[in-house]
Image (cartoon, rainbow, N blue to C red):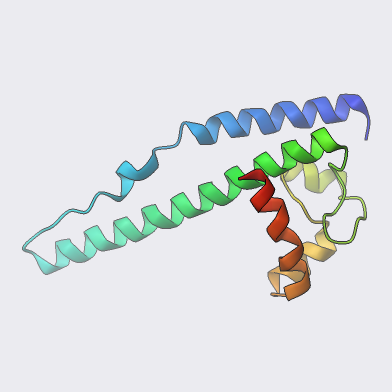
Length: 126
């Protein structure tokens, strides 16, 4: 990967990191009460959706930070599991992707060794 490519990905990742730092935060999971059971169920559903969104944002935030670390240490664009090159189109779509498409598909199917290889990546970036 050329220095220009790395600078471009660093800029994209920095923008994404700034965007995520402006997220709505915990105020979106305020617990509201109602005497109406249907309204209470609506509040609960909205809370659960907000929590799922916060979890997703947190995962992306850690992934972006890990990708920026990989740029710094020179391993950006290489799969953290198998070491092969991550496709350019994949990185353009998801610049924080730590896995090549083959390993990502295996991880999506729940292969434990691939999931374990991601654990240090996320803990280092946290």
